[in-house]
Length: 252
Image 1 (tube, rainbow, N blue to C red):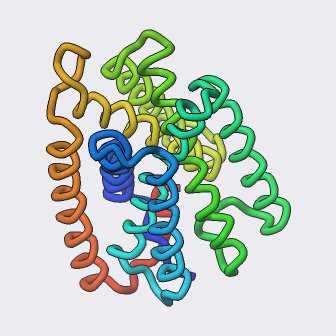
Image 2: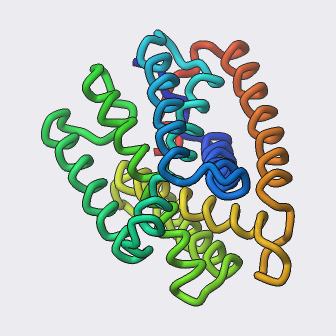
């Protein structure tokens, strides 16, 4: 359907930036502005549905629209996960286990119905819906997993980010030096970039006395939004310059 960007280094940089912004933006609304996790989740889910409708109606890859949906899944995932883990009192470990199960079910049903989990094989509206459902739950899972690593595991924000970053390096090495399925590695990397963004976002926002950098949710969100907008502008220019470059699996 050629509505998904090429999976290049730029894709992963933008993914991490968008998911980190989702973490800081979700915390900004729910915590700093004291809107609460439940109301924030409803607002962000509404934002997700609006942007998703635009993405489904589009006939080609539009960077601003695509990354708006990614950002929407990330912000919604942040507040949804926090609502489960904190408001409902499930805890990070239980919330992570539940979300892993949901994501595996989504991927399993997608594989059974569409016969492939490769983003380059998405040719139907049903496949596209499976794609975005998997992304929504993978980003929600990433928040719970990132919070678990940062808080319950004892690693802290920096240690959690270092662990996830190391796992991502191993995925990259596996891609280039093993015969492990590129589609499997893609989805592993896609899931891992979310907790990396979650822990990195916490590292940016938390005060120095809590092992953070002390930028706060407002400052961190502004910095990340500026960076993401700049990357979207660059991606838009590249698409206009090279409209025929439509190989979604460039790195997979």
